Length: 258
Image (cartoon, rainbow, N blue to C red; front, side, top):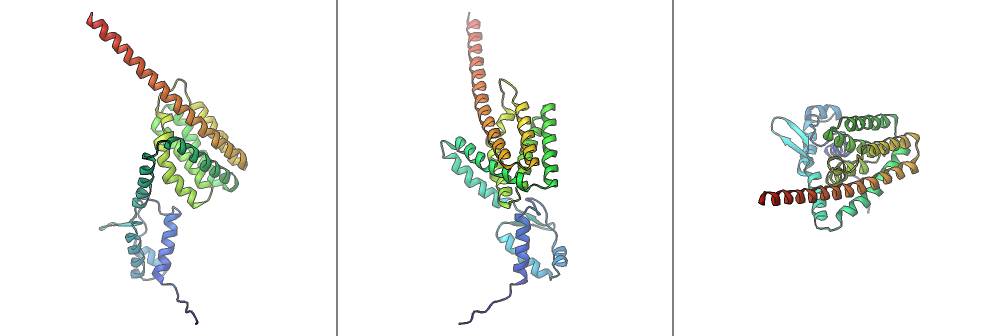
């Protein structure tokens, strides 16, 4: 029996293009997309065809319509995705160790791919956030340091030129970063870890710039090992300080009782 091949509907073609743009980050989360009229002119189609595609994306929670203001890329799919992961990690006693194991392999792979695939524009972006990180460290600006640190690693993920790595880094790895690696910036330490962090970032940038995939992967893994160890030591140091403070307060209370 002969099978008929039906032409794809115009709205389905528009839908495919819009989904690809959103997935590729051309329309980032929270950003307003072009209005119906502009999209219809761009695709040379009628506005009803565009509207059908937009309504499908709204039904999928990919877009949200704001009355009188147009269409925005929704954060809901990513929030749902992260909520599932947070629930899983919350029930897992060894979650932090597994997070570092996972991050070491993923970030090592992304660094290697970035070394092989990076463009001149990628290098400029990585260098930009490297410079911002170094400046924030020297100025002691913790908030800017945390932002530049995350953005540095995100630009490396983007330089791998794999849409899955970019989205994984922008969602799951960002959440894991906020739950673990940001501690190294905000926690108290016996000695300052920032010079080593700067050196690691600089070495990683140079390896990617040189196109040395093996070296880039090794530095990324070594960097995460250092971060993990410093966070552990930082927590132990903070615990000792709190214990010493408790003992000191106990001594003061005893003196007052005299």
